[in-house]
Every structure is written in structure tokens, then in C-alpha cells.
Amino acid sequence: MSLVEVRTTSQKGRGLYATAPIKEGTVLFEETPLVSAQFSWNYTYGYLACEYCLKPLETAETNVRRLTNDYSISLPYRECCPIQEQLGGHTKCPDCREVYCSDECLQNAVKLYHRALCLGAEKGNAEHPTNALVEFWKKTHYPPETSSIQLVVKIIGMFKQSDDLAALRAKFDDFVSQTMNEDLMIFHKMLGENFSQQIDELYELISRAFDPAGEERLQWLTLSGFRSLLALIGTNGQGIGTSSFADWVRNVSELDLPDNQRESVDILIDNLYNKLDEVVGSFLNNEGSALYSYQSKVNHSCAPNVECRFPNSNNVLALTATRDIKVGEEICISYLDECALERSRHSRQKMLSENYLFQCQCEKCENQINDPDETSEDEDDEDEDEDNDMDDDSD
Ligand SMILES: C[S@@+](CC[C@H](N)C(=O)[O-])C[C@H]1O[C@@H](n2cnc3c(N)ncnc32)[C@H](O)[C@@H]1O
Image 1: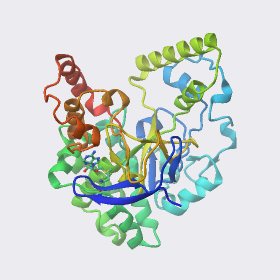
Image 2 (image 1 turned 135 degrees about the vertical axis):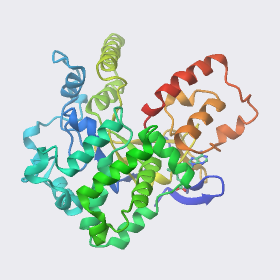
Image 3 (image 1 turned 60 degrees about the vertical axis):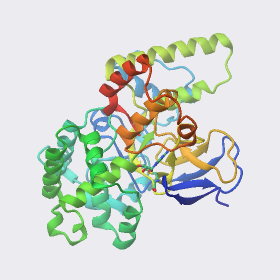
Image 4 (image 1 turned 120 degrees about the vertical axis):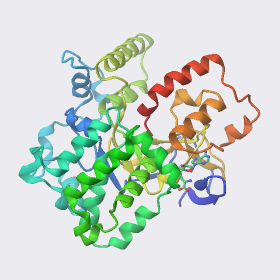
């Protein structure tokens, strides 16, 4: 029996609501994305993950050694690492040598998009239009990345290969869309000040790579169709948290350890995060991003009752209750991180309207409606710092 149903309200559009009492820790549903892709800089930095399901193909130790550039690091509690097997057991596309965690993932990719997209021997050719497109994207989208042009590329591949174009079209039309003005703000968030010129250049490169005008299956991919697709990804894209180091940290923190061992492993973890911060900047757990049909209908709350987890260390999302939920209660995730959730109503509303383009109407914000609109001096200072960091936020 489904624990949730979709309902529509005038304030927030569609949302999910509980149809039965739900206990903390319950998985409300698991969902495989319509499409997912690794971030391009992660790929460039040699972050090994399955091209189809994004499962990491490197251990937590390899992951943290590579990112900190310190090959002397040795992680204890190896059983807490989600990746135990060695890369030798994985599968490669025979033509382009792209890596998959299993034959099944390779077959799925080939069935859905890879036949149309495989570059074969051209994979390493920087002049190839698809590679030029990705390189251009990377120049406009430095880490930590929040979105991926590879999602657009894979969607194009899906349209080129699909047996049922109408059904595929309907799946994309089902995602929430914004007004033209909101689209412009999303582009600004994704691509920065010169977004207009960059969108034109990206479209030019897409046209060179896929010739949408000459391909009946891609007739929708006009400049305005491309802009709509980019806005759809900006509004609905969900980060996929599958870094093997972050999973190791989570598993270690759940171990029942004597005080002295807990203290020393906590110090080790703090030191490793500081080192990551020095070498690669703020460490983002996200391997890539994806579009989920059902999960994308979950609204935001500043007092959320569920969170997105990736229990199999791949792109399968498990929406999990973080507290008991009553029948009829709205199911909400937080689009903000834990720190931001602690801040005043004014600050939260500012972040949500600047980054996600809506006035939050969650219960917490409605209850705090009479709180002063001005932030404290401290918060104003933080706001300034945050404005500088804003483009770094992830979904
Ligand atoms: C990923 S969609 C969520 C599902 C969406 N309501 C729908 O109809 O498909 C995000 C959009 O939902 C709306 N939304 C989400 N949380 C909200 C909230 N707390 N208050 C008001 N609108 C919200 C905003 O329009 C936002 O851009």
C-alpha cells in the first residue's frame, strides 16, 4: 500500500501527503531516476563511478586520498566502506571504454541512450562536438557543481532511441515549470552573469553535436526548447549523495564505539574534512544530479519530516521519514542545508527566494510570520558571506 498521495494546493502546487501513519525511519518509497549523470568536474578529476547508476567504483580510502592528494592516509573500520570490491570486476563499453559497475548497468545504458551517444574511438578527441560542449560547460560551471550538461546530453540520447516518444515527452512535461521571469533567474543561478550569451553558445554546440533541426525526433530542441529543458533541470534536479568517503563517515558515526575510540575517530574525520577543505574547497557529497518523477513533487519545509537517502550507494533514492508523520500531514524535504534551517525566518526566506524562486509557505514560516523582518547584525554579516557563496549551494 502506498504511504503517500499527490495533492494540489493553491499555495504550493502539487505536493505529497501521508495516507497512513508513518514511523520515523520508514522508507516512504524508493525511486530510480528518469535520468542521472555524474558531474563533469568529478569525471575530469578521475572520480570513478558507474556511468549508468553512479555507484562509486573507488573505495572511501582511495576517494579521500585522491581528493586530499595524500596517499599516506589509511582509514580504519574498513567494513564501513560501501565499496569493497576491486575495479577489475567491472564492465566497460567495448567501443568507448566507459566504465559500468555491472553488465546490467551497461545494458540499461545501451538500451536507453548510450547507442546514440557512444563516441567510440572519438571519446578522447577534444575537438568532437560533444566533448567541446562538456568543456564549455565546465568553464562556466566550476565545482562544487550543482547541475550537469550531461543530463541534457543523456535526455537527447533518450529521445534519439526511444520506442515511445509520446510517453517520454509526457514524463518530462510532468515536471513543474516556471514563468519566463523565473527561468531567467534560474539561468542566472546556474550560469552566472553572462547566462544569456552562454545559453546561446551551449545551444550552438548542441546543434553541432546533434543537429536537432535535421532530426525529426529532436524537433522540440529549438533554442527555446533547450532553455525550457535547462530551467526544468535547474528547478527539479536532485543531487545524488554517493561519495564513498561520505558513506564511510556516515557508517562510522553509527558504530557503537567505546568513548576513547569514538573520540579518536571523530578527530580523524575532522582532520580529513579540514584537509579536503584546503585542497578541493568545500567538500560536496554529491556525485552528480538526477531527475526523479515522484520525488520532484515533494515540497520544501523549514521543519522537514523526510530526507533523501541513497542506501545502495547508487542513484536509487529512498525518501526516508526523519520523525513520526501523521495521516494527512504534508511530506516535505528541506531544500536548505542544516545550518541554514537554524537561521531566522527572514534569512531562510531570502535564501529560498534567491535560490529556489519561491516565497516559502511552510508551517514553520507561517508560525513565525510575526517575527521581525530584519535579521540581526550577525546574520546580516553571515548573509553577506553567504551571498558570496550562494552559487556553491547544492539542491
Ligand atoms: C521541485 S518542485 C516541488 C513540487 C511542485 N509543487 C509541483 O507542483 O510539482 C519545487 C516548486 O514547488 C514550490 N514549492 C516548494 N516548496 C514550497 C514552499 N514551502 N512554499 C511555497 N512553494 C513551494 C515552488 O514553486 C518550487 O519552485
